[in-house]
Image (cartoon, rainbow, N blue to C red):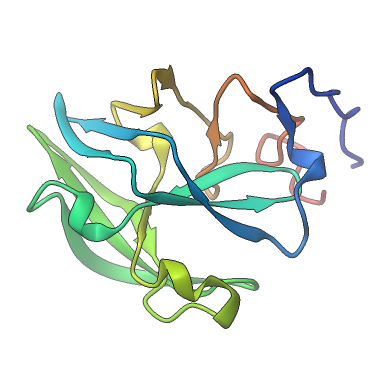
Length: 165
């Protein structure tokens, strides 16, 4: 199935169809906050985002920026053709524990060495994720972890009928 018509970005917006393939890594100056179980488990301005064609950005955060005890390594792995083998974490905040709610690349490919061990979360599985004061909408699908904010336009891969994009 072909992708839906590209949404033209307005001033101050980015289209995911202008993002590169293979993906690009860039530092983000924005404040990242993640809330789980009613508790803020991350509040930092240290993050990097991965930009890939048809995907909203995925934000990676140094593990030391998470509240102590928020991340527990767990079983399982997956492979990204660009970044390498991912390891997973259970995420705990307040009275909630989300199994495999986060992942990292312990030994990423050379292009992504800067985020070695940095952690990304699935925003759909958290109570809330914020970039500055913008509450993040999660990318559709249970495989992707993109962060959609008002300045990001699609259409986005991840929803029904988009697997073959």
